[in-house]
Amino acid sequence: MNHYSIRDFDPSLSVGFLVKRCASLLSTVGEAAFESQPLSVAGFMVLMSLRKESPMSPSELSTKTGYDMGGLTRVVDALEQAGLVKRERRLDDRRSVQIAITSPGIRQAEQSLATIVDQLNQILEPFSKREVGALVSSLQRLVERLQEFVETRPRAQPRLTPSKRVRASTRSTR
Image (cartoon, rainbow, N blue to C red; front, side, top):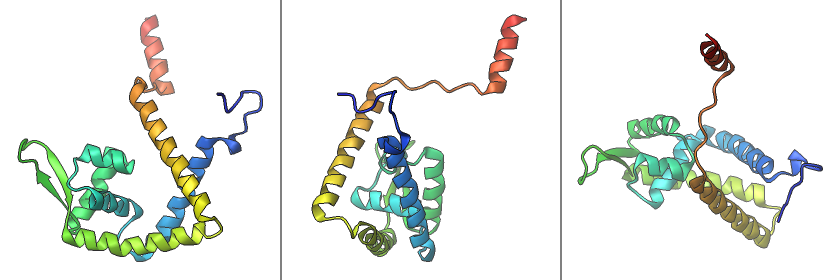
């Protein structure tokens, strides 16, 4: 079933646009809510993921949180410096590292959780429990579908920047 058509496509009614806009606005709300917290939103997301399942490899944590490896490394460095997480060598493969939440990390995640719960309850106040349940269910299905879509498609090749395209084309004409 086609949900969109080229003829009457309206970006403001696009699932992608709406999800991206919600993410951006939620990030803004979260950052404001965390101004008084010792954590960033990113740090909170990492701690909450590790609170649920710890330890995790950096790649697993990257997948769970949606942060790229470079950004995740910076967040984990800050959390480790604060004593909220620790990096551990895997016993079966000393080359591999896993990230584990510490007891202070669990306490901090739980303290910060109250801030997020309060914010979300304020935002969702006009919605019924049924509406929120339907929204969560739909978003979970969308995440599963997107994950499946990403896993079954070939990875996109890096695009050449305009300057690299020009250099590449001038080399081939010499």
